[in-house]
Length: 603
Image (cartoon, rainbow, N blue to C red; front, side, top):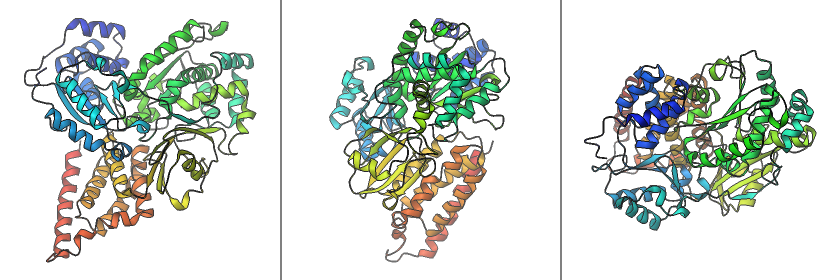
């Protein structure tokens, strides 16, 4: 399609069938937009107007939603939309060079659509394939893993020959589980329905007691007590109760949920069904991140099989009144939707902006009704607890952090992949097992987590010491920790929802100062100002994204300050260089940039 003469509107039958499939519900807006774009590649304004009219929404609302999510496009972006994963581990494997090489072969500028409308090439945030990168997404749906120069060359040839993506070599899209060490959750799986039958025999209140006895805490990072969350949801008044599985695994460096959904989907879905039994829910949702769209067919197959086995639907396992079913909501590229209230906003067909809390989702969640939102790994754990009991689970790990934790290990190591350990395991043990050598630092829990130096490898994974959402990125002594922090800063600036000024402007100011340092134009004053920005954002932002955005900056400045100071050296030792004048000009330029950034972002 030539972008200079785009089709103004797509055929009405396509849109009518799509709207009918979703019962013309305004809450399905994100799904309607996603499916329409999958058919045609982009979202013309006349179609958005038709959707608004059919759903009883304003065009401004529909365009606002379409403009919020990275994977929606209101202008043509090419028949082949190539998105290179831009996490730091992909860069360490050469993704930047491969992107430039592909652009050279296709004669297209990064971030632009080629004049003939055939292709565009740009970057996206981490695609959850850090253990088999560099990786890319094609048209937001199909992945290509383990990129090499030869694969890039072949890919360019297929695009020029206009070979449909579905006809590309199948091995390119092979995603391996790479389970290097399994324990409770990744070991032998219970038969479908086994844990559910045990839960029904116990009864909902007894199951809740087992979850509490197990001291199960959420595996999405925050570590909230699952039993408490379920009880609050159960006790909250409402016309309906909902169970939601948060599979929006957007934290860079994390891919454990991807593996659980691919390998242990029955255990995850069974845990949701057990949760529904406890809280009294009749409907559930899996919120699947847009980057994992390739798992959609597999998950729907599992759901259909479980319905046929009477493990979902009406009178589950013959229990009268126990009715529960699950639908899948696919995201459209927004890291902030990993926050549970933003996720619910997205499910309701809105922009994924976190809500003001209280009220919490357990009181007023999806459609204003009591809703429990739990991580993929949490639901998987609930299945094993329902089968084996809370005392058994509590005997694993530590007193405050019971059970096991799955880690997504990537970066500088011989054996990247998935590792499951009891809580309380030493950081150094994980490094030994994955074959890491000469390790300088480990980023635990993703960019919003903690960066540990070599002197801290004796610390242990657990909520009382080193909490984690699951990412475990390894950096040897050849890596520049300043560049690691700069990559993370760009990620947070890109992913800010823009709702609050401290996050929207603060992240942009952090990026500008780090880029200034990278160019060799910085000073120690910039480091001081970065520290002040960290303090401001940590206490003044609307949600956890802004509060955690400076975590890697704070840790790396504190523990790897020479990596920053080497970027100041270019201000010295230059013949005829006037340091005071240069600093004065740099400060003036920064002040102008800062003022401009603030004015540009004002509502």
